[in-house]
Length: 138
Length: 404
Ligand SMILES: Cc1ncc(COP(=O)(O)O)c(C=O)c1O
Image 1 (tube, rainbow over the protein chains, first blue to last red):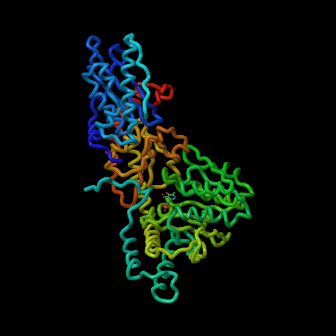
Image 2: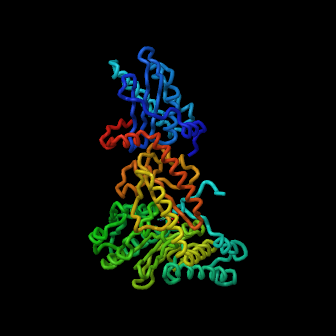
Image 3: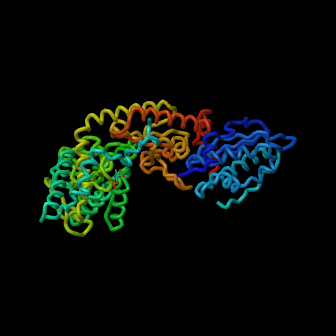
C-alpha cells in the first residue's frame, strides 16, 4: 500500500511520543482500540485548570502507519487548544490532512475517539459531567 | 551495493537461475516444435527435450520418468491429485483426510469436494505445526481413499513426518498425496523410500519459471490413476490434456538438476545464514519463532515480535521484501490461518514476519535485514502503549479494551 508523504513523515518522525503522569488531576488519559483489532491508541492531555488550555499532549500507538500518524497529528493539533476547541476536531479533518485512503478512515475515527476519551477522563477527574456518546458514521 | 529492497520472500517465489533461462531459450524460437507432433523433427526434438526433463526430475525425487505428469503448477497438481483420486476411486470410498495448515490449493479443493458430498477430515496441528499421528490413525476408515498432507508448510517451513504418515495411510488401504511445493529441490525427497503415491510441486519455487509444475503419480505398488480434470487430446497418459509447455518443462528439468547437484552445499549455507538471522533477531525481547525449529526447511524463519503491530512493522522495514502474518489490506484484518492453527493469538499472528532465504541470499543481505528489523521493532515498541504496559507489569489479557 502506498502511504501519503504526510503519513510517512509522522511515522518516521512522530511528534509527542510519550507518557504523562496519569495520576495528576490535570492529566486526562484516553486508551482506545484493542490489540486483536490491530490498533491501540493512548492519548494524553495536560490541561491548565485556569484557562482550560491544553498545554501538553502525548501519545503512544500500537498500529499501522496511518494509526501512528493520526495520533501524532492529533497531539500536534491538541496543543494550545482549549478543551472545548479540542472537541471540535473531527476525524474527517485528520483524513483530509493525511490523505488517508478509505480503508484507513478507521484510524482517524480511533484518534477522534482517543481525544474524546482523554477529555472525558479529564472531566470526570475534575468533577464535570462526562460527555455524551457521539454516534459515528463509520 | 545491496539491491533494495532485499528479497527475503523465497517461499512466495524465487528468482530464476540464469542457467535455467539459458536451457529454456532455444525452445521458444529455434526448437519451437509441439512435443506431440510425431511426423517431423520439430516434434521429435521437443519430445526429446521433454523426456530429458522427465529424467532430470525423476532423479531428483527418486521416481521413474514415466511417473511425471506436467501441469501448470502446484495449484493444478493439487487439484488434479485430489479431485482426480476422488473421482477415480469413488466406488472404493468417499473419505479424504487432510490438515488445517494446508495451502489453499488443497483446502479449497477439499471444500469443493465436500460440497459434492465427500467426507473430509481436517487434522489439527500442535503448537509446533505438526500433525498428530494418533489423530491420523484414528481418522482413517475403510472409506478413506486419500490422505493429503503437505511435505513442508509455506508459512513456517515445518516438515511433517512424511514416511510415518505414508505407512499409516497404506496400512489402512488408502493412497498418500503430498503437496511438496516448498520441499522439492530444498531438502531430500524420495518418493520410493518415503512411500509417496502422489506429489505436487512447482518450478518457480525452485529457481525455475512460473506457470509450470508437475504431479508425480505412482505407477507400481500400487498403480495409481487419476481422472483427468480437463478434456482434450489425452496428453500425459490421459491424465492431463493440453500441448506441453516445452520451454517451461525444460526449465523445470534444468532447475531440478541444479537443485540436485547443489542441494547439499546449499542446504548447509542457507541454514547457517537462517540460523544466524534467527538467533540475532531472537535477541530482541519477546520475540518468538513460530513452528518447530527442529523439523523445518533450511530456508525459512517465521518470527513474531510481540507488542508490535504487523502493518506498522512492515512499513518500518520497507527495504526488505518479506511476508507478514497479516493480510491487512482492509480495515478488517485477517491474521494468517496457519499461525492461528498453531494457537497464536491474533495479535501475535499479526506481528509475525516470514523470512525466506534462497540460493542468492548473501551474508551482507542478512546483516542488513537484522539491522532493519531490530531498528523498526525497537522504534515501534517505544511508541507502543502495549509495550509500556507490559514493561510496567500489566497483564494485557485482564485489560478491558474499548474496541470500537
Ligand atoms: C505449499 C504450496 N502449495 C501450492 C502452491 C501453489 O503453487 P503454484 O503457484 O505453482 O500454483 C504454493 C505456492 O504458493 C505453495 O507454497
